[in-house]
Image 1 (cartoon, rainbow, N blue to C red):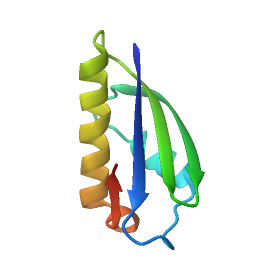
Image 2: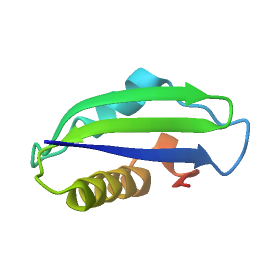
Image 3: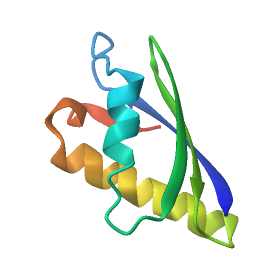
Image 4: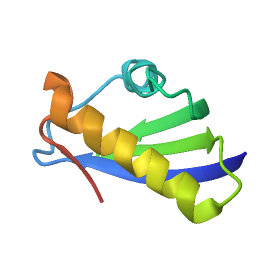
Length: 84
């Protein structure tokens, strides 16, 4: 298991998301690769720290990045968010 970190931010500064909602969205990974997630949200974005089932740090980050991209593309409240 490896830790992976990403930061996401909205395209419009007034857009917010509840950290627990974001965590719940990311925990719905159908392949079950993401084990634990912590979200720290602030006025300019959110930091995502996840423990991913992988032996390789780069692969763990890719798994998290792909999951976040998928959720941004398919979840209405995240359409205006991007990985920064």
